[in-house]
Length: 157
Image (tube, rainbow, N blue to C red; front, side):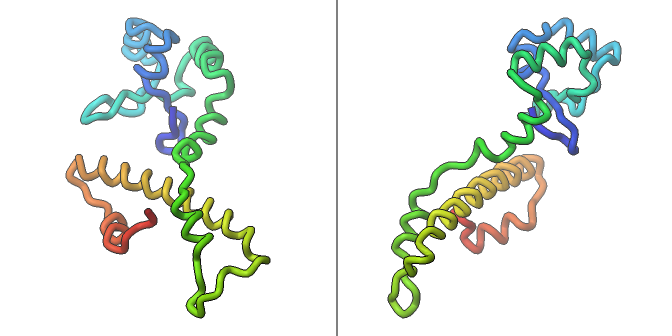
């Protein structure tokens, strides 16, 4: 479940068929009869994605029961939050940081160390997401201009 072109989509197999919300036959019949709209077809390591709003209301209710909440809100929350990992190296770096004159970070700025380390964790998660995006584009023979710039500068991680 994710947003595709700013519209919520669910994966046909992973989100609908495997959990038992729809059978494969029900999915095939609904697709063939135009009762659901497919966002993209399955090819080159992509899975079939179905627009959530095009599902029948009873299927939407089953899916909400399976998830335990509103999928629109859940998809927004899980976009990047699941990818953030604690970066102990960043915390250590900022804790041991010395200014050019050799002095440590002043006591009134010490609580900023946690903030800076958290920001580094978020940037690392964004960098991983961007690398995955660039690798997917590279598999299709496309390049991402910013990717080369980030790699040549050393990135964030």
